[in-house]
Image (cartoon, rainbow, N blue to C red; front, side, top):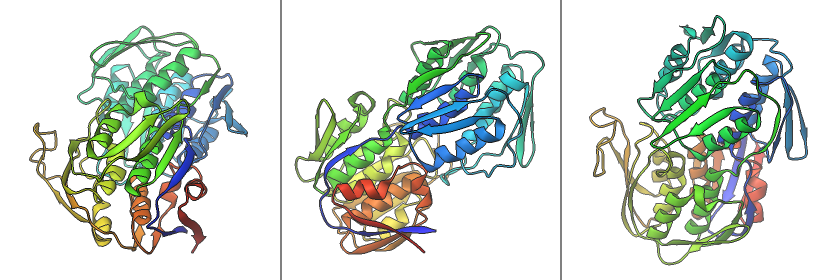
Length: 433
């Protein structure tokens, strides 16, 4: 396994271009299964999670080739409706159920894997498919689904605005008979981008008010060409790198509209930004100060942003509180930051004005950060993708040389991270054990 060797303590400066969004690109591969025609994706990221999903698609019958930064995929026929032999490396495989049911009438996918950030049940996926007319059977290793005829439209009210469940319903219902309405839908930018792509393919999908999405089933979808939107998680990671190291980074392709909540909170703590024609320039305006915030579904403060933001807060004066309301176990990296000299305590209480769904469930979902603290080098092992970027940021802040193991987790979501950070002046290298 490779590892990163990082010598920190220097400001990062320069320009960096965002790759295509992981959370959109991987799902677009699944969307392409809905047609037998060719789909072309521009700005497609070269990341580990995309390779996993490409492996899934090829196993189902897809033909894939890469041309520069474009990916071309076509699935003329579904040759295999069972994907259970694939490793359970991420959660995207569950989304193949809808396209496979529409194209072949049956499907079997493995029990989902992915980041170790607490339980992420798929009950909303399965119940939604049942509402659309699918028969579902769960085993210890897989989920099986089948239909007779076509899926049929339905009104589905989600108990939580889950991104995955929203995507599952859309993918299943675009070729279903009749109208499907999703109530309490997720409305993340990546979902909007998927809807744009599906419109190009011939789908009829309306985004309404109050988290409502309506899909009118069509008999056939066609090939399309689509540019993957820039990765807003990368944008936040690089912004935090600039501010935490007291540097200045122009993040090319960063979209202000997708980052409004982050930008507001960055300015509150002393970070600053300038929106340019190329992207957003990030830097520090004054000594950093503490803040109280909580994660939420879009348009709230994204759960994938709290890891680099919290790491940055170790350099802020006073006390900060982050209340995690999306996942109940997403502070697994805190122990490593404390090992490096941070002063962070994780508690089970809801440290916000409004209690969240994890209240009284004994979940460690609130973090108290006291700073500023001087971080020192350490040897760390990455537990999951977003924790990995927190480790990288902490090592770049710290004095001395740190080793980061398990970097394949970081490779899942960040394209050529060593080379790109080196261009910003980071002393980072990849070595093989």
